Length: 463
Image 1 (tube, rainbow, N blue to C red):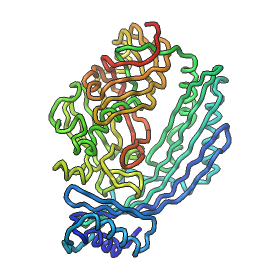
Image 2 (image 1 turned 90 degrees about the vertical axis):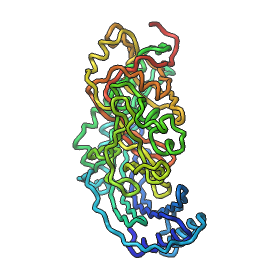
Image 3 (image 1 turned 180 degrees about the vertical axis):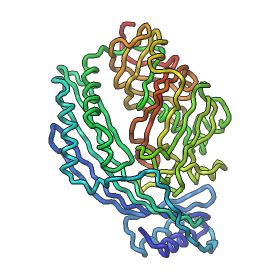
Image 4 (image 1 turned 180 degrees about the horizontal axis):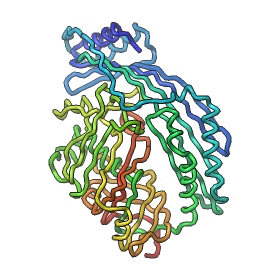
């Protein structure tokens, strides 16, 4: 990390041409990525990344520059070159840094880089053989292990100085089932903002079996019918629809530019009365949690929707300026190579008053989407298209046969208004979220819920 005198000099150089705010972001990251195919390690990459980013505001405009050369002369040069893009006169301000205590939301037990790689490989092999042995129809299993230890230092011209350490680990298991030329996959990727002790808190066998079960079930499934029908979306990773189709539209990144369908709608009804949703970066050891965000602000629990009414957005410092609203602890970036902006942390719909069984029993005909997959979204409109990785028809209030090839097509703002039942079984799943400030770990979640009508894409099939 950088000394206080050097931070002071960098910020003074950054403000030398009339900027009104400057920030220095220092990152030192060590990461490991292992990939296992066919029960053997296919690749193993470990590395260290160190760099410094300098950001300068002038009103509602900004400039960002970064370098992995952390010598004093180079960092002063980087700051001055960035400042040259913002013409003006230096304010001559002097700084007095006050180091802020970092909240300890995410307590780490065992640092992953202190764990022998053989233990990590043994964990992967265990997951591999459990999934491979699940059923003879499983033709291939891939296991990816990831961990990272990121130390950051953030200082700015208001005098803020904070340091934080983020440690995460994740194992991603993909099972492939084959029947003739046909293939179906199942996936599970548990992760946490936690050290290697994470694997003492979960049973990796359960996740491996579940990945294999999904693939095995779907290889035997009929094709999904299409049409506008009720859809029950299960808990956990089902929340990816809210995250993608609605969550991104509640980030100040799009709201401040008026490119979001939810811009200027605080206090208005945007969802069914039973829908409430939050983004909460303070959940201890959750995959998307942070002690402080990438501007040095403590994360917080932000109420986004309350009983169908839009209550707030996820806001970073720059877009907060543009909107005249305070930052909410949601500023994030993939690394020092990216300027931060407003991003989700752990975003989910709150529990309702029904049970999962009640929702199914109250559905005469529809689709039950147990696991969601990838898709595409237009954040300006909320139009989305998502694959259903594991789906079932619902008939006469009961789960019927499995179906594959289903996609959910709609618009986030319309789907929110069509949610008519929410269960009490909130759960979250782990994923990587991509946006303008890079790819970031984020939890998505919800209880089981029902959308009264949504377009299902599939193949012609019986009802």
